[in-house]
Amino acid sequence: MAVQFPEMTGRHALVTGASAGIGKATCEALLEQGVVVVGLALDDQEPGPSGRFHPVACDLAALGSVREALASIKSIAPALDYVVNVAGRDAKRSLEEGDERFWTEIVDLNLRAYYMVIREALPLLRLGRGKAIVNVSSINYRLGIPRRSVYSTTKAGILGLTTGLARELGAEGIRINTISPGWVFTDRQVQEYFARPEDQATYLPYLHERQAINHHITPLDVANHILFYLSSASAASTGHNCVVDAGCLLE
Image (cartoon, rainbow, N blue to C red; front, top):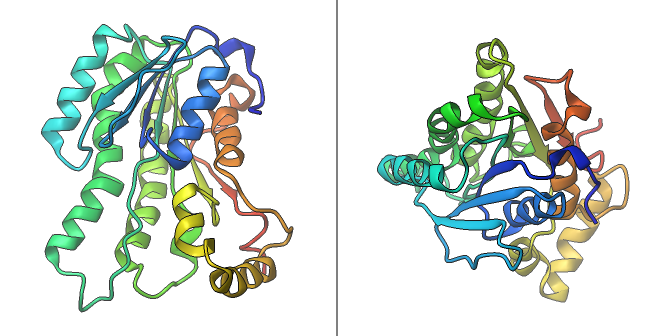
């Protein structure tokens, strides 16, 4: 169950990557608070039974689609209190395999889309009460994992985007923070790395060795941290990076 923030009831949030994983968990956690949620995703989504979840199809890697989606939500949300950027791809390719097209595809979705969503949402954020943005990065850029250079570049860039906007947006009372998760047990990650016994024998011991606590990080774990940084409980925080990794980065 998500931690509860009664102040959020009746407010409006925009979440990208809303159809799966951390994005979906964040939408569900916000809906539990009584928030009206606009969920952007490339995949098909169903409207929520409460009538407070509004799916909007959007190719976040395409600027035209982002602008069109943000323009369309004005009829749903007269103002935005919260913006949460989650969408991304963690495709793996070596330096030789990762050509210019691959670079562009990953950077456009994982980094440029974050910037453009914030930029296009800014007029509605100015009208909101919550005035908070959370960007989801990853600890991956700290780990030096082979074949992840482009992905790691985008995740490091998200931190730069957050700090780069913190003072600029702070002048208008808008806060912006980053959440950097460790290895999250999303449905896709479980299927890719933990579905077979031999996979579990490979990856679970590695995970238990690296993490300071034996905890399988769930999408809800991350969503709860997102809720905190959206809420007034974190009113004194902006430009920061909250690491949610069960102690993986501890030396």
